[in-house]
Length: 370
Length: 110
Image (cartoon, rainbow over all chains, first blue to last red; front, side, top):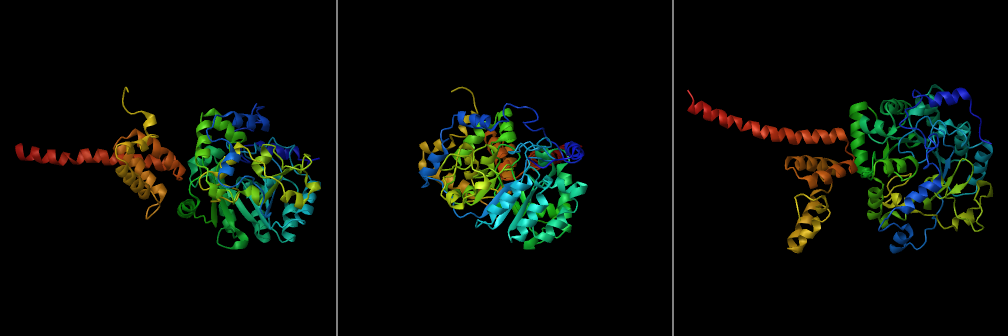
């Protein structure tokens, strides 16, 4: 049973005022691409010369992909969002009301957390702040001494009932990892919807005013950049230098660090690749730029990803493709059956989309990995 | 072979080594070194390359550096400004010769 959401809130979320809308969710449009199995079929059917991920891994000394020590518990609390960006791999949107983590599952996550070595809890969505148990979850993680990350779309901070969040986060030392595809308006709005850039800049100003982005490790502001189109993320270190200058000069905004993430051929970005005739070339680019130096640092090796209903996945991308972690008995793995030793011994599930994390400098929820 | 400027020639650029491997190796090594980050960033160098590609009107270079500029973090605004710089220098280069013309007219005319 997911947390009930009031009708007035849903109407608010659906409005352009609450958050720009670049498109509608595949689910809302009843797209044939909405089911994960349809997406996997499209990727598998592509004729790629070097399209087998496990072969690529084996060729560079990784016959099996297994986890390293668990460092991050990533909790996806739901797919509800005030935005509908064109590249969203979650297919999030204001219509995704059914998929939201309930209090019991939140508590199961906390109980599991107590049995792990994880030092960080990475909370994502959708817009995770929309889940009614979000603040409870953050507080409980902070009480446990965990480093907490909120993956924030920025525009949500402008809604009146979330206006206190920058200060609330600051009081708890929560790291804000915010989405900003580009430091300039054109690209940001084209991917995330008209008006996103201005709202994002205003939200960044509020975070700066709450103490974020000034070098204080307890108020760390991380900007997450991703390409606006069918190409790889730019070199992370160079982008950080240039964006710091650009955002300071043009908007008076400071931030602490930048991480760059490749777009994954999943959900709405997959749809966009197909519709624009870019899919084959993009996948060829990912496979041709396979970089063995990225493998050791892949996020599936140090992260466990929990979905809104408590299912366990190797990463958020596998979660969206409905590929749960492998279990010895073949049962669907749930957080209530959390078994750290069995999970540590698992083999990580890979498919063709995994080339998105191994191309070029590598890509993860923590940025480049090479 | 019919016609000029085949798009697949860009991907075959390396085959130029067939006639002289040593020179080709030197060229490609030097080329790679030129575009490494130095006093200028890779993004800035790509924008210069894009502008020069338009000035020398090389379709292969325009294809290559339109993509590279995007991958290095440039956007359409920046790329369009770079192309205008190339166009302005080309236009200016023509127009500044007009001073030579003017001096001829002044000398020869009454």
